[in-house]
Image (cartoon, helix red, strand yellow):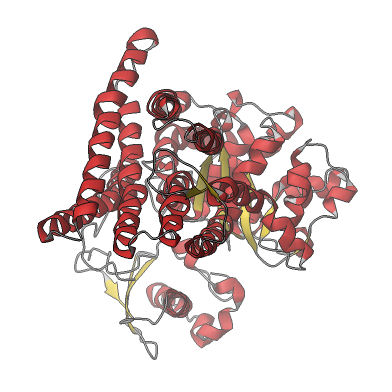
Length: 617
């Protein structure tokens, strides 16, 4: 535990009352830390403790309290080890403050999804997960540097001293970027922009839309004639909002860099590992697990070849052995590409609607485009993603380190040696196991446990709720701003506009997201069907289970919202429908059921204490 005086290693740390008491021969050592209610139990070189911290004011304070408890646990373990062996312990003189930064143990207390309590023992294998003696190798690049000129750094894998100079010595890395160089530059940039800039772009766009809506109520924006509406309507928000969103998505981080803020620190192999100095390069490659250990989270750019590459499989397995699964974010590259292509299609459909509705009251192209072509494109995209998730198990069923693709074959021996050391350090292979034996243990872990862990990170739904809502608001919500709020300036009653706004809110935040979830589930059904039967299933299921219900619900929303101002029954029915729909959205996008099932599949039988009600920590 990074204390020179301690000869014993903590094999297991179990937090939150998940320790099952052994038989009468178990020895108990009780300790207490001011401000905490701690109970330590020591048995056969294993330590467990319960922590009662009441209601901490924040998660940060809770983590600080737990770290203090863990430092105290180091001292108690040393005392217990000395008591068991009958020898005096120098560690008993230590205090929690003596452990220093190297004595912080939360990462070692994490339970991996590999089916056993795997922890990398830093004191036994410091060369694997620490930069002890070579702190200069721990480097990171500012996110604004990686995003410069739309990710020009991803254009080629060839690096130089100048690219290495784009990184600097750091203490901690915010995000470890795991990717394949065979994926195109713009796909990587789009995926990373979605992960790091989506919230900024969405928030600023919503503020921009709100400002546009306020201006629309004054009548200051230009009008056009729309034969489908009684009042003249605006068009400014529909024309500007989606381009404004894309501009922020692609350039917000560059603007941040120009303002002097570097943004989060990320690890990118091209900039953080020297590509010319062979000695420094080898040292950096050997410290890959240490980079992962010092990263707060891992951002994985997933494509169909990701789990076929030796480096990326090693990175994922190492991270899951070192960090909890919630710290890994899997970004489906091609699914995001389809998402933003769909947003562009929505924009051009809006533009054609503005033009065509100036000449006709019913735009047939809307019915054909949205209910036909666009819906089927979404179904096909969801089906492709469902096939990809289903193929992970098959792809890794016969996994072997020796059969993985490695762009540079000279790296294979080094990676294999690191994997063998990792397996021994994590306890997945005996300490005296040969490299080949340890590699076979790694093969078994990847075959049986990595698919479940990886699909858990992917989630049940390919897109998050906020992504779906932003899409729907940019697609449909801008119509409310241009039509209903503009009509308020032309004399339309305020109560009608407010009820219409509630109806638009229900449609964009509840109905359309539920329709997307339905398409995901339908697309994931009958994956064995291909060719004509598959096309028939996608078409019929979309028309019967998505398009027609959406049409009925749309009419229901506008009828009830129009009558809610004059009929209490209509108001009650509308609010009840809103509540039921909101509950359905919470269930559909929570992913709790799939996450629980995947974790249980990966761990096998329920572990000690599973099902306990004490999960507050």
